[in-house]
Image (tube, rainbow, N blue to C red; front, side):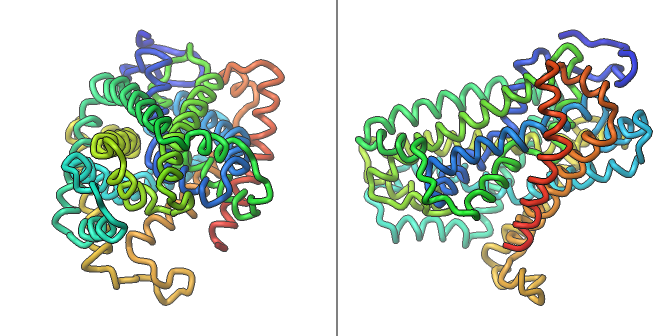
Length: 465
């Protein structure tokens, strides 16, 4: 796909680069969406909420929340052709709307920066576990020994800082190389590698003797096991798993050419992201069932429950190492996308070039991550907002996670849906999204009515939970 120097109407196609193909954008956007949420969170929230019925509700929520907001964010990015904040302002001005709508992008970018600061710490956990698995540290392990291993990692500020630094350096390295040499090259290498590793993991899972049980668990709905809380969890997870509300899709959309259909592309990303989540479930649950472990083991499923299983399985060291490489790749692709919107903004608003912008933002994000590291050990008793009942017992790590996931992301997503649905010219949307009449009508009604209501429900539920 070649660069174009001018586009009539909306969008400044100057010397800014473009994705080389639609596939490159899909791989990068899918890499952003595919992260710890797919490989780590999706399996355990599915286990906690009854399996197949939860999956069905989750898929419905992807359709009514995830895809409409993703299309809206990509639309803003491609029309603005700048960093997310400037793109939002330009699209607002062209539609005679208040430039204050750009607060959606400001909130999203700030959320992405904060999330990366503690996401990098968790990515470091995955990196450290590769070595543990390969060295056979899980072999013959007991629940107590595996728990001690994880506890030892969390209790060591030095270990956590080393792995946090390694992970952040990997992210900065890719983003500093720009669109073609960084984002696109990483996506075209890491995403196929991730899919291959997932398929290997699923293939291994078929040998456990419990693959059929896992398939039944994931795809045979038991609506009796699904609670109202489970429905709302599915609603929230569908929103967060696609990297929405973080200005990422606006940043990636700013590199998207005019000849690419936003509608078909967004659907492709959602399908691939969901496919990874389901494959992760098919890889993990047979191992869980084969070892009589608890499917709804919560966040400890990946770092405590599964290592126990790996340590007592044939070829467990090899499979465990491959699994944590997979987890690292998933975290890495998401980390890259979290850094990109802020780097894009710094590069456009300062005299720093791409490399300098990436290093500056990366170092600041790394420094904020130290607070999360210390809150896991030295500052574990520090609860800054303990005077409020809702935040009693929440460490700095917990607070950063809570504020971004429960307030900032839904707020950014809601503002984006309202702006695009109610303040952008219908004909401009119809032309840019390249949807057929009925498909456009469905999307338009979703983004105006259904999606905002669903996000508000998630917002209120998260604040009251």
